[in-house]
Image (cartoon, rainbow, N blue to C red; front, side, top):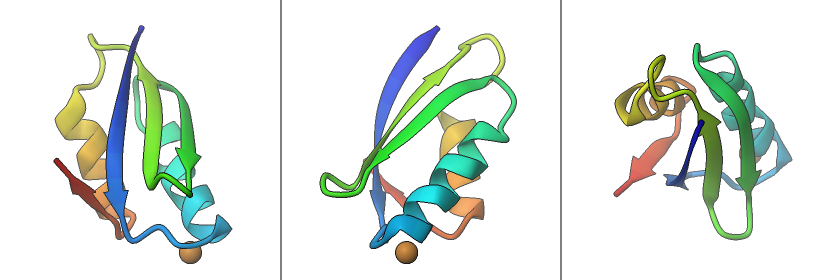
Amino acid sequence: MEQIVLKVDGMSCNHCKAAVEKTLKETSGVRKAVVDLGAGVVTVHYEPGQVARDGLVQAIVNAGYEVKQ
Ligand SMILES: [Cu+2]
């Protein structure tokens, strides 16, 4: 299990928090996703053999948010 913190643009309320967490949890290989709205980040716990950073970023983008470096 690996953990990564991604900086996400455009999350402004609890709906955004729920949307980003949901799309990540529906992504294969993701075990846990927790958004910190105040910091504008999401912490993701995932299985590196099943999904990579690109896949996590893609899921967030598909939900309508942007990931910053
Ligand atoms: Cu929102």
